[in-house]
Length: 242
Image 1 (spheres, rainbow, N blue to C red):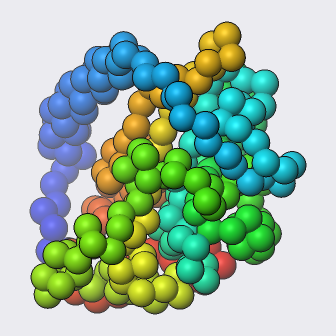
Image 2: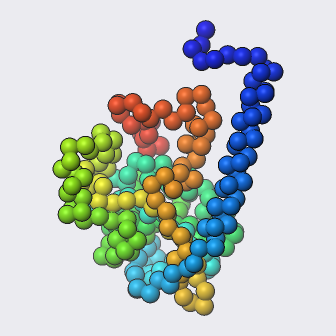
Image 3: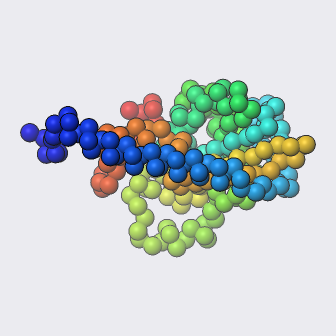
């Protein structure tokens, strides 16, 4: 017999209906938050940034590629990384198929990282992605939004003795040091282009990125769920490493 509680179909349906009512509350609250997100004021991006792309150096405005909206995923791939972050790679797996659908809705979706363009191109080929990916090498773009930390800023965290094992695992998988790994932060930023002026409308990081991680929403609907509390090796790998 399973250790989990087992009941009849009728009893299960009664409890499922109660849960559905609670799930609908979350859905409706999500609609409210989406409206609040859309009502946030915009900030004009006055600083000039340059991005190295497959088609040469571009400005932020040129990244829109004919769309009026731009979504950028800030992928953790530092200058000294040998491979892209494992978790960011899983996110890119989820983002990649959405590119044409968002493009059809006047929205360009792409990624940026601080690694040299050649590294990004080679890794993109390995992973089989079509999504555009630009290098911000030599630019403060990621730093200005808060997605790059200096060694001095990270010193208390790295010397605390409480470094989570997953950080060391992820750093090793990317071929860098723990300090080099956490110097980068993942994030999502949104922009709009009006009359040639670029405005930033939204920025998110940490668990705010979970909508880009479709596997978590599916696991949340299984009996075991995410099951990440154990001390062992972090379960997530690049899709060509399973």
